[in-house]
Length: 190
Image 1 (spheres, rainbow, N blue to C red):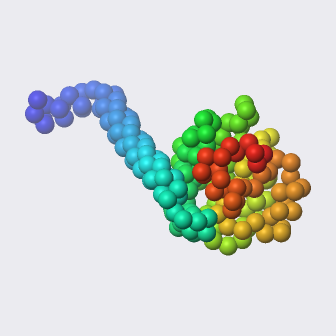
Image 2 (tube, one colour; image 1 turned 90 degrees about the vertical axis):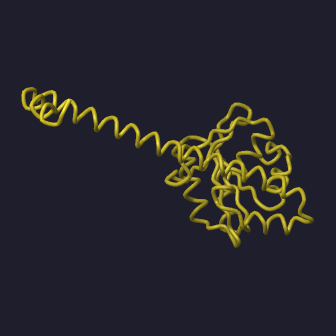
Image 3 (cartoon, rainbow, N blue to C red; image 1 turned 120 degrees about the horizontal axis):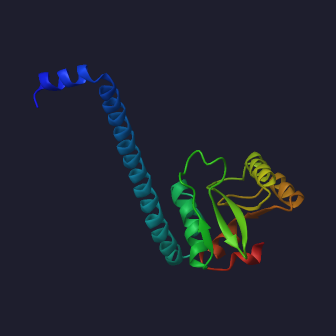
């Protein structure tokens, strides 16, 4: 069919032209969505693979100071995956978010003894921000769930006060974090 034939056909059937345009737009939107899904799937897969390598490397580092220093240098997304992978290695069920950013303060979930625990993962080199702990505690209150605030920094006095006042919140860092990453059962710290 030549171009004049198509023009004549479209002029004779204007609704057909509208249907073709709409169909074209739907197909293009679908293809764009599939392309974006594939990119996020590849990114998740890459971060999970890197997290596995980090877990293995941690066992080869000579001391806890070196392990924490190394954790503070990994990508924040790899740190999230590292925690989720460590929980999976303990035989726990993990629920991953569809995306890493825009997660509203929720970096994943782990099911422990049938209960969904929300996870907030933070890579800090200094003291934890009490505002971050408060925000996560507020999320826990709104969701009606308990949660693990897991970080690589130091838990300051204000953050410990928030943790003590909140029955929903557990903060894990330092030796406890390293123990969990080494395979120790997280239930000990709940």
